[in-house]
Length: 257
Figure 1 (cartoon, helix red, strand yellow):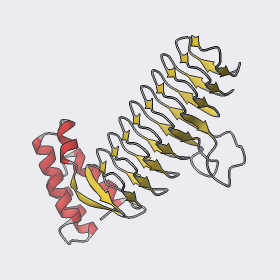
Figure 2 (tube, helix red, strand yellow; figure 1 turned 180 degrees about the horizontal axis):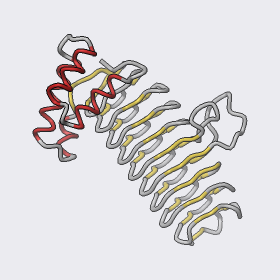
Figure 3 (cartoon, one colour; figure 1 turned 135 degrees about the horizontal axis):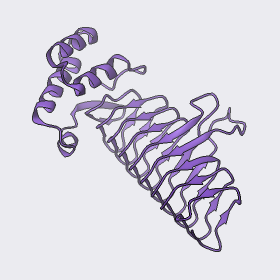
Figure 4 (cartoon, rainbow, N blue to C red; figure 1 turned 90 degrees about the vertical axis):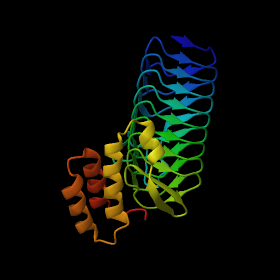
């Protein structure tokens, strides 16, 4: 293990022998860090925080601190981070709350640019990109492969589906279905995230099915129940369409329209 002499690591912290810790970083008592992770200078990792393998933390990141919630009284809530994540300068990731999920969960291969904030009780999937100063309030769920542009703000309890694109400076107050693009204050639908779907290898057949379902759900004027039924009747063999319809049917905050 390579640890700079100025770093402060609690003797009970559990760090793999391959972890690197830079100058003036502080690692707390209940922290566990997996193989090959690199902690830059001036990083603070505290609380009941578990970090997977090959994660990279740039200077001044603050990871696993208590939630910004007035109800929080120091309970041992957790933060769990997967593997191969990158946290750029000044990123802040908070633990969960007892009243919420009890923890915040970050998946694998995510990229958090400078000044990103992930609040308490959030769940972030895999291969998510959050650009500079994108901010999540509490209890938010982000699906795999989603991209949030710079300065995006997301309201608490919102769900953002997989393969979505949220345009920069957007204010997201309602749920964002998978496979779509949204932008604005408040964020509105701008069609499918066609560029993102192409980059992830969606076939023409899959995209055409999603286009049809999207038009039925959001542009046909049908009730959501009837649109969902027709979408399933026409394209029910496609798992993507089922995922889109299921998300819309179960959106608790309403859908960005």
